[in-house]
Image (cartoon, rainbow, N blue to C red; front, side, top):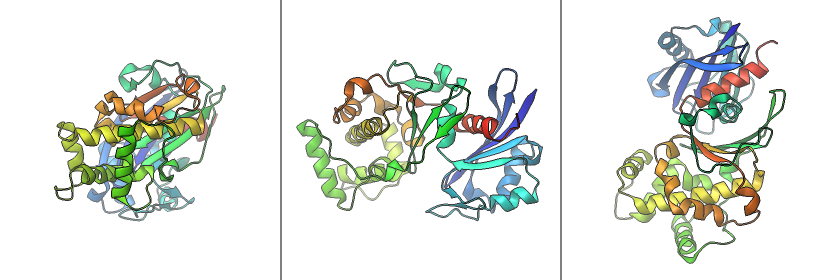
Length: 329
């Protein structure tokens, strides 16, 4: 028997949705349809739902379950965000009005962790492996997302297919001073911290706005620039100093996450800031940043490290969550 699950990947500015088919016999998950919208193009949650249903040619009420991975905090009725959505996200009222099947609104990085529990990880087209270490199936694993913000979520897969998800907001921790770093990287780090002046978090360096901050440091004579324009320059190879610094701070953050979670199931990186700049992982600065925190390095070098490439991973992960938490039996 097959079940249909509608899954969302709802960010602060855009929303992707998919129709995921679950085969109970094989336990396989396949994304049959996939649509994307900018929230600015819709006028309300009800209108967004209508657009999704129209583009997918499928009604929410027809599904066996709905799982929404969303940026912000869901209080059981409304989705709340530090930077308010363009309209109220009153999911409970809508679900009741439209007679939705069982549904859940979960933290936006929870589906990314859940995707790592699926055969998605076995397809080399979906993964850019940064080392060849095997995944310890019941080992702790971390999803790390770098886009408009900086997100981290850890989780553990149990032998019966169930799972545990942690609660953390590591993107907002203060920038560390690495225990060991060569003079060139350390001098640059001190200059960047001095330039930014205000309290520095990893998010202030690594998010989309963080890239704009770094651009102002390296190119002070140029006018204020948007994160999108910075991305364009990076893809054209016009800001190599910035890319090197970004690579080092990303490595420093990865090393910090390794030490915090000791993730035998791996760290899996995704979201636009890295997916649009995959050559960041080819820069020597990336691993220099990881090695700047040398404690337990022998153990950490045995942990898998990779990039989730396929944009459907969050939709597949939400499908897995729904199978385990929402579907009866």
